[in-house]
Length: 105
Image (cartoon, rainbow, N blue to C red; front, side):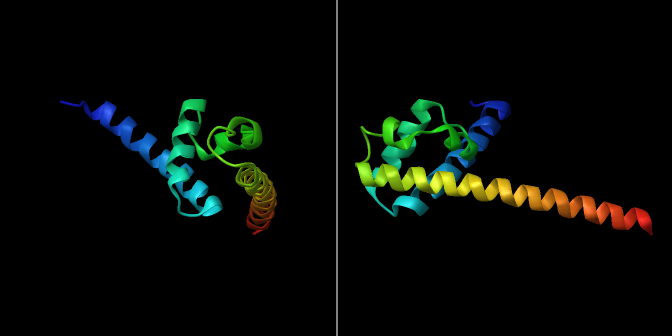
């Protein structure tokens, strides 16, 4: 029988890999390659979607994807994390402005 701790770690890991799967599918479309790519990413040590920002898809996925798909994936990863950074800075500034306004009341 599986302990609750092991099961909860499995569920969390499955959800994280689902996030990676959804991202890969959104970039490459529905194909048999997506599951192969996700499995390869697991072997490389990707546990979270954030781990993909350290991936060099052109070099590290050459066994699983053709060149143009690797380049498309690289571009999408760069775009995703560029937006994430800009968005978080905006949210930080908004939070500072909100706190400043509330403290003035």
